[in-house]
Picture (cartoon, rainbow, N blue to C red):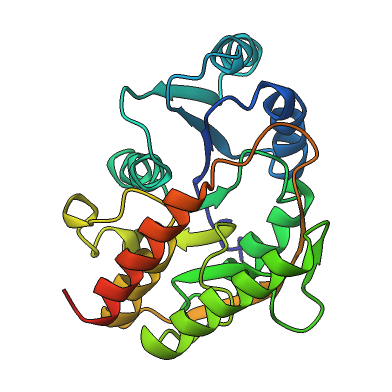
Amino acid sequence: MAPPPLAPKPRVLIGVCTLNEADNIVTMLPLLRRSVPDADILVIDDRSTDGTIQLVEAAAKQDPKIHLDVRDERGLGGAIRHAMQAAVDRGYDFFINLDGDLSHNPQQLPQLLERSLALPAVDVVIGSRYVDQGKIVGWPMHRRIMSRMVNRFATLCLRLPVQDCSGSMRCYRVSAIEKISLGTMRSNGYSVLEEILVRLHRNGSPMAEVPITFTDRLRGQSKLTPKEAARSIWQMLKLAAGS
């Protein structure tokens, strides 16, 4: 009897959102390729002025599975939604997102994908700083406290069944993304990370977490300004109110 045919490999798209990340993207792209060799990589850039675009274009000439979309708008929320919509439109099975500043170690991506493959009922696997064995390296105490408070608020007030609601390192099942109406989402900043989970949860999507080590950026500047943080908190309050 002939052996059963091998299941096709899942199609995976990795999304990386960038704004002036030249110092990091040149290191990140080779790490992504080694960590998830068969994945396509989509860089969504918000008109960087530091050479990020040119570096990605040069990498794409060497690696046909690296792609670049340059947007005229700015905002993490819009960039993530853009990448997720690309995963839907292009027929991928899984979409993986992570920060473009090397705060997330690309070498941790396989464990998210492996957990997603092992748990076919789960629609999103979150790389979590706040489950057992999860870690944060390099943050001052006040930032740790603020992050904990935001995540506690999200867990309780948004009724999310996970401990890390604001981390962007996630592996989504694209079939679940298709059902959450990306075009009607309101968050254009960091609160998009909570809004995505809220919509998935209200749709009945099961979630899981795996521990990761998050390391504060070593190069470049954070895009999370006090104004953006306040805007994100306000958006989460609106989400909690159901508006």
